Image (cartoon, rainbow, N blue to C red; front, side):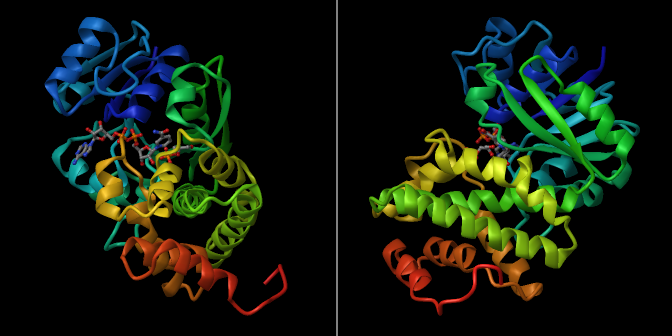
Length: 331
Ligand SMILES: NC(=O)c1ccc[n+]([C@@H]2O[C@H](COP(=O)([O-])OP(=O)(O)OC[C@H]3O[C@@H](n4cnc5c(N)ncnc54)[C@H](O)[C@@H]3O)[C@@H](O)[C@H]2O)c1
Ligand SMILES: O=P(O)(O)OC[C@H](O)CO
């Protein structure tokens, strides 16, 4: 039985703990708040997130990171992207453990992907790092609805080991060696979902949604190719798959946040009425920066960034997108 630590007891850390336990691992879930850890141990439910979901007996919790990490063969990092570096600085990861990121974001200020933050701040060799991504809305996963996912790692042995560790009767992970492409796709789809949400908040329907999704994927793939990713990644689960789930589902925090903006709320007001982290609100800045650095045109990401910064309203951003010079689809 593999001993896995899940560091972060939010919606996805909690749901993924259930997957790992269903796949046969012994899981220790680290929660920042002692009352959350105590609640998990006493009631087999996380009082803070998905509180109606009963967790398997193989999941126990602690608020002590040293206890959580003790003896872990696999460490799963489930804190928001912008909090990963500071979290890693406070933890001592077991020397030989595989380290997996669940976060979908790009770090502000450094423009680093999560695997890069783990290598740098956690002093972990890239061969021991993996990520899990794909169309995985936490609520559906916790209800054991079927889903596929991607386990990406530079080292094939790492990807295969992690695939085994999280392959449950309802969760089907595929391996992928393109860590860069998978991470870019996961972070950028959150920004595209904000744009789709804005369109929905403005009252637009399926045509607008499909147009933003498709052109959003085109600009994501452009950035990926410029940075050296495999173009096929963007048509797969980490790309098209996750984009579709996030943009279409009312469960998505990013899409919902965008809807609030589209209905006229400001970023602070939308944050106040939102539950859980909408990663795209921060990552739009770092992805727009990556686009500038690599000379890639990303009009949807840039439009979202300008709305988030308060430079444009959603209707103004839409008008700008539609008034761009006409061009062939494949440029
Ligand atoms: N919820 C989903 O459906 C889902 C699915 C796939 C991937 N993800 C990704 O997983 C990551 C985590 O998302 P989530 O849904 O669990 O978020 P969440 O908002 O539900 O929970 C975030 C967790 O991080 C903790 N946290 C917040 N600030 C922290 C800090 N400064 N230091 C340490 N811990 C802190 C919170 O206490 C909480 O336990 C995000 O990058 C998200 O994009 C989420
Ligand atoms: O709720 P969101 O918008 O963070 O999306 C959740 C997942 O990333 C979907 O795969």
